[in-house]
Length: 106
Length: 349
Image (tube, rainbow over the protein chains, first blue to last red):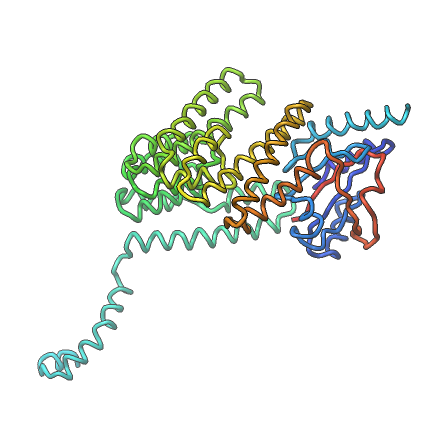
């Protein structure tokens, strides 16, 4: 599972990009095993152990997964209920990474 | 013993017979009385539910894609028994149960086509057709049999509620198909489908606007109807609850349109629609907050929607997240300012 996430993190490891999860699993210890087994190297917030946890409630999450693409200034630029597909997601992210790099050069 | 009682004809004897009679009957049943169609249907349902449990257990235990594929092929619960039962006595109420089971639970099964044909031939006038049209398999389906069924209900069911619901569901499906065709660059097909959707939605708003069953579907918080139809129907809402839900649905649609405009970088349009959405949510909050819905009341729902518009929509600065990671270490979303972020609400389930 999670091959696209892994490849995205690897592809952009020297770029101004980070993948952050907000995880809704109920068993923290079991999750730690999953992270190791699936080589999930990116960081996740703990959502309090359920899909009704504080972070997902604050962000009004209606379905899982929900994805937010946020630019380098902290502005929300894309929102998806469910994955829109690897191609679309990659395009959105790469465009914003280019923006971030351009602004760093100024 | 029994015969002696009968011959003596005493009260005791008759009572003894009465007491023994159910036991005798039960004995007969267990031996050779065939079960009714209704009982056979119940047995099929139990069998199906057990098969479903077994199927899910095996899927969870499977480790490879090949294993999973084999399980789908061999262990997915079957519909053939239901179809055989229906064909035994197509007009029987138990047959209707079996046919509805197939089209609702197995809309893409190989039995669905034949089941649909029998439904259309022998049960199209049943009052249960409205509920069938609303079932997820039909509502969100794309199969030819499910389309056939909707058209047949719209054409031949005598109840305005069932007709109106079939019209509404068909309109939604054709519009969804039109959008799919657009994304696949099939412009002509998209135009045709969209044209039919508009026509069908028009019928909903004109022919079925006063039909309670249709109003209940269209004027709900998760309505599938386009804004034009919502606006037309909310005015003739029969009660305060449906009116409030109708305005909420309109506000949701405006919010969605605003987001779509944002995605297309159409900032002016997005701002205009966002303002309209906010104003409509505020109206709902003022006039209809107490109206009860699935998960609370319209007041609760609008509060969350307004928060989303003001803090979680495209173009707004993301709220801060102040929490801990899986190992318990504290960190914040703002720690990552300067980087592009993909924030993924996920779970390993």
